[in-house]
Structure formats: C-alpha cells, structure tokens
Length: 573
View 1: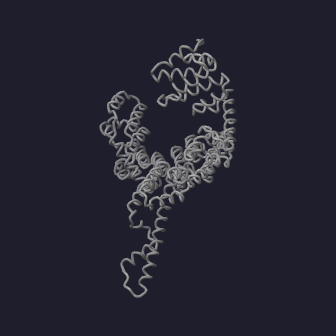
View 2 (view 1 turned 135 degrees about the horizontal axis):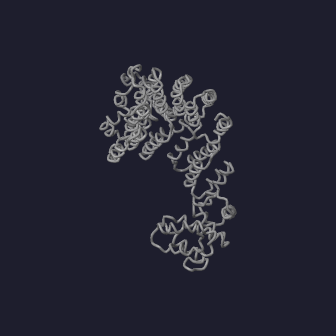
View 3 (view 1 turned 60 degrees about the horizontal axis):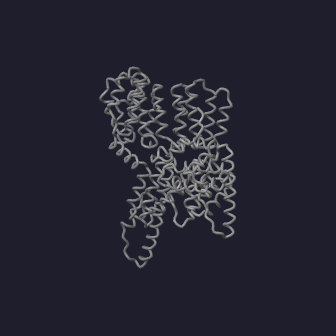
C-alpha cells in the first residue's frame, strides 16, 4: 500500500509517550525524501525559521528526550530539501553516529562537502584571531579526515589545536580502535596519542596504558606502574590498582607475564640502588672505626647480590597487591564470589527440559544449557541429582557432559585436579577415553587464559595419552590454558600430535595451536600449518588448521590479507 500523506505520522509527535515519538521519527526518517514539504509545513504550522526553533526546543535540545539524535537527523534532511544547507549541517552534526558518512546519496555527499567547507572557513577565521565557536563535531571531522587520508601530521595537529585536547584524545583513541583498519597506521596513531597524553599537565595513565596494551609495550607499562606505586599521592596508588585490573581484563597472558617480569626487575633494581646508597653512607660514617650493625650489613649484602625479593618498605603491601592483581588471582576470586552469590538459575526450567529431552541431541543440549546457566557458579547440583539420566550419554556426548563441569567450575583453579580426579586418566589403557578426554578439556576450561599452574600436568597427559579422545581433550585444554602465551614448547607438542595424521587429534591440535599463538602472526608456525593443510587428506584436520590459522592472524587487519588470498586462491579450499 502506497503512503499518500505523512500527516498521521506527524500527529504522533504530539503524544507524550517517548516510544510513540521515536516510532514517528523513525517513520519520518524513512519517508522524509518524499514528504519533506509536508513535514516542514506541518510542525506547529510555523514558518521555516520557526520550524528549526521548534525542533530545537521540543525535541533536539530536550536532553531528556532519548531519541534527540534521530530528531536531528530528520530535521537535517528537511532543511537539506529546503535548500537551507547551514541549518541542515547543524542538525547533521547533532545527529552523531546516526548520520552515516558511508551512505550513498546526494544528501550525504552535499552535507559532507558543506561540512568540510564550513570547517575550513572557521579555521581561517580562527587563524585571523576572530572569535568563533567551533562545534566539537567539526573537530572530530578533522580527525576523521586525517585518519582516512593516513596523514599522521594532520592527525596530531587536529588533536593539539582542538579546544578540548583531553576529549579529542579520547575520541581519537576510539576512532583508531573502531574505524581504522590499517594496523601500521593505527600503531603510529596510538604512539602519537601516548606522546600527547604524556605532554598533558595531568597525565591520564589509564588511557595511556590502554594504548600501550595494543602497542604491546610491557616496559612502558611496568614503568608507569612502578612510578605510580612509589608515589606519595594515594590517588596515584589507586590508579595503579585500576590499571592492573584493566591489564588483566584486556592484555594477553604473554604480555602480562612480561609486565610482571619487568615490574619485579624495576622494583628490585630500585631497591638495590637504595641499599647501595645506604651502605655507602654507613661506610662514610664509620671511617673512624665505629661499630657497624653486622646483621643489617648482611641483609644489605644479600639484597645487593640480586635476590629477587620485593623490598620491605612502606609501599610493600601495595606492591604485593599489585602483583596479585597482575597474576589474575584477585580478579578470578572476585568474579567467582560474585557469580556464586548472584546465582539465580531457575532449576525448574532445566527439570522440564530434561523430562522432554528424548533424543541424544536434546540430551546433550540440556547438559550444555545447564553449563551455561551455571557458568562459574560452582553449582553442579543438577548433574549430581541426575546421575542416572546423565549416564545415558555415550561417545562424544559423554565427552561433552564431563567437559561441562569445566564451565560450571570456571575459576576454581586450586581444587581443579581434586574436582576432576574421578574422571581424569589414571591408567590410560583402562580409562574411558571419552570421559577422560572430557575431564582434561574441563581442566582447560577451568584454567582458560590463566593456566600457568596446570600447563606441565596437561603436557604430561598429552604425551602419555593412549587414545585419540584423550589426546583431543588434552590438546583443547592446552590451547585454552596457554591462550595467548605464544609458548614455543607447547606449540611444538601440539604440532607433534598433529603430524601423526589422526583426524580427531589433528582437529583439536590445529585449533589449539591457534589459541596458543592468537594474534601473534608468527611466520614460521603459519608456514608449517599452511603446508600441512595442503598435504592432509582429513577434513577434520583441515577444519582445525583453518580455524587455528585464522586465530593466529586475529586482529592483524590488512596484514592478514595475504594469508586469506593464499588460502582462497587454492581450489582445494
């Protein structure tokens, strides 16, 4: 049915309900190109100049109105059709992300052109010492143009010449991480942002460290943490805590381990220098043969000799807390406690689902649903109350059912071996392969992205495994526990498993290698994996390797293109 008038839609703008206004604005946005004249003429029956005031006062400038950006977009299109490009630009800037600069239309092209002209005009007037009011969105446009044109000099100048440098730095970081698809230029832009943050009167260390995470710079991060923790300002110490939590949340295991190592080294170096100064001072005071405190001298000597101990000082407790946070222990403990306390799972839903689960597929789906519902809560009541029903699982369903315990007990790392001891391989020749493989996989899920305490055990289990399902579970567990560590020894173990050309084991090892090297773009492992991908005849291994290769190139942006073209260009794939 063809719409002949927008009057009915426009009348909804008089309603009090915000949802009705939003509905009306959405519909008007869809039909504004056809009914712009009616829309412009019908709002309060005012003249054109009064219309813009009405939109500003009633919708756009009403900060309590949830959909003010949508109203700005509709008004912008109306004034575009009326030929009032200045007003159209004003509202287009107010529409924020709703104004799609990538859309193909005369309206978008014209508005962008007018926006650039307007910005140039304002900058010229500003250079001429005239008083002008610069819309922050226009400054955002300058940053966007610099990014699109790959002009790092213009990018820096657009930030430094803005009226609010701090806000512009935050916006530039957001643009770099969400829009910029060239990794090399993104890293250059992030280095500029870090440098500008460091030049600010009050440095925003939280934002600086966010940039340094993506730049993979553990030395600078550990230096900032050391500086903050040794500060006399309590706010700086609190910032160090927050940065540490952010690092655990966003950094890879490899980066975290490097930061920990650098942090300890820096603290020990500083402490050794302090001790040397103290020893020199005491030697000077005791030149006339005064008695020295012998026990203290021995302690100082042991410290100077390089023992890796955190110094006993006023900030030692803060240092210990920072180290515990960086190891991930604090975050895991807090998250586990929160999930346990806030567990509100409806067991009745699971009971009803179980009663209707007649097929094997429905049985497995119910087990997985239970794992998701109780993630990290350590509440396995449903499984314990339904052991007979659970025992119906066979083959890979048994593997999945056992592994689901790893999801439920995620974070329970201290008791993980004890928890899974009933299912873990003991005598591999007599073990239930599916159950034991699922138990190893469960260990990997419990220790996912925090596996430094379980890696040696999993490596031994992989080497001693006597069946494919056990090796399959061990490979997946190693991949999860060593996620992002880029550990060469673990990669070699997984690769050795794959070249035995067993379909089930090879699929898991291919995926696990990608997890271990995620985002590292390691050339030698990539070449070996691609070569074996072309040689193997097993579809499962091909699938596992394809996923592993994609994980290794994760986040590499344009640098992944050559790998994609190589694989897509081969008819085999």
